[in-house]
Image (tube, rainbow, N blue to C red; front, side):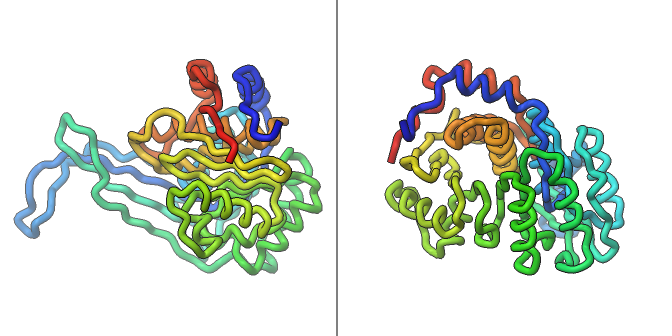
Length: 346
């Protein structure tokens, strides 16, 4: 029946099917830097802390984190995107290749700087380091609708995958000048199109599924939703109809997520685990990665969203830009006394 709770057995079977699913990822690729230091003293030059450097971690961020999550869940990722002709781009592609992603369709754009998000974290020697500032470096023109490698690469790679994932961070890869052609290329391939878009979700009309967070849904609809389930239900239905998509999954932070699927009642999934999180960096990338692999391997939208809910609950308990593996998902499902977190129909 619509909204029925997926059984533990169904969820474990779905996790088993994720391995080897082939996904074309069209992504804004970002390099995340985490620079850790201990507090040394106050500067004599200005009232600021002087940090003693401990280490710097450089990790895939933005759409590159979605790629990493697909790989950590044992999916296959063929990546289409761009980086700059610079060291951060070289480093990022090296990380993705080392994790087993196919980056042969990523091109270097000399007019573009690879986006870098640098976070400075500080604390005493024996305390948890807290983020005190973030510095973003990126820039360059949007990808040209004509003459860029984007659409030819998508059309070529779509032939040998089970679905297409767009991870859009509004960094100029996908924009109003080329989004319709991208959606049409996905439609022509006959492959499902799944979208995680920071601020341009309305460009992807006709996608199979989308996973906006609450703020992105509010922006797309032009009205605040808050924590009122009734308003979220109305908004989710309106957004699904406006986008002409089969499924909308609205992630709602500590309130869990809400699932809207054609022909089914809306379902609210309470957050998995605790709402006392360690770090929400990249949680949306984990959600779309798990949802994509589950849906493309034969799960229902509710089953796929339920597994994505588990994955999101796991990853926010980790610090930094993190990923989730299939063994972690199996343990979470197996340990939950009420698999699926008691979803309740709206």
